Image (cartoon, rainbow, N blue to C red; front, side):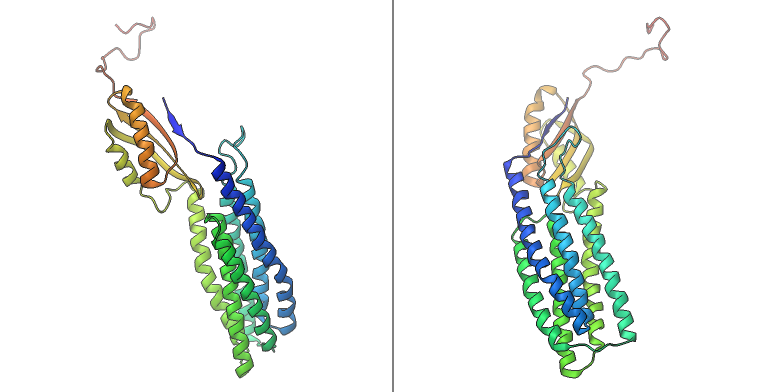
Amino acid sequence: MAAHKHDHGAGHSHTHTAQSGTLIVALLLTLSFAGVEAAAGWWSGSLALLADAAHMVTDSSALGLAAAAAWLAQRPPSTRHSYGLMRAEVLAALFNSLLMLVLIGFIVREALERIGAPRDIAGGTVITVAVIGLAINLAVAWVLSRGEHTLNSRAALLHVLGDALGSVAAIAAGIVIVATGWTPIDPLLSLLVAALILVSALRLLREVVHVLMEGVPLNLRLDTIGQDLARLDGVLRVHDLHVWTLSSDTIALSAHLEIRNLADWPGILAAARQLMDTQHGIHHVTLQPEALAAQPLLRGDWPPRADGSQG
């Protein structure tokens, strides 16, 4: 006998719809400036601007992918996908994390080449374009921060914040070049931004892989959850306890509870659901009751006799 609770109501669909709209707005803002910054970086000779432009292009693809994943997450469960397509946002976050690592590799390679062979850079152009880019990045970050905080939206926000750091680095590089003419500052600051982005990208990648490996959510402790269930009145023991993440806003739990009497199960189930909801934020709960045998096992012949009798 098993009992479960699985909530996928209108509120869940509404939050994903709002998230998809937020991501589309952020996509349009980012994509509108990427081409301008790329052209300005090429004309001025600034790696910081080119890196920032490349980052904005990856931002656009990341935001587009995130918006598509948020839309897919709204799809209802089917006979082929019994949980629906909630994991689409996790896959989008994984792709965006890997895309960030590729971008960091590109920036590092170009920076090392330019340190060995400095190029002339139009500092004034770099400053002007980078300031505009920073304003757009901050506007996009503000839009994303007001939406739902899922793995998907966090991956997109990471792209945008990394891009904002790139704009700051480009502004600083432009100021130093205008003031001193020292062009190596441009690739050096690009390396600094790449290092900062790398830390965040690896942290997000670790969390995404943890979700895909069905790990216990990092903010929860399996032993604490098991102890809380075992303390419920009528529960003797808890085993086969599993807790994992379906999507950023849906955590699932399954467990076997040994109880004294099956007649007590409805009350135990209600208490367990309320406990998991209020104490741990787990709404998708599947529990299997197991009553201890009322009679002791009887010794018999083994293997059974051919006629089916046991002596």
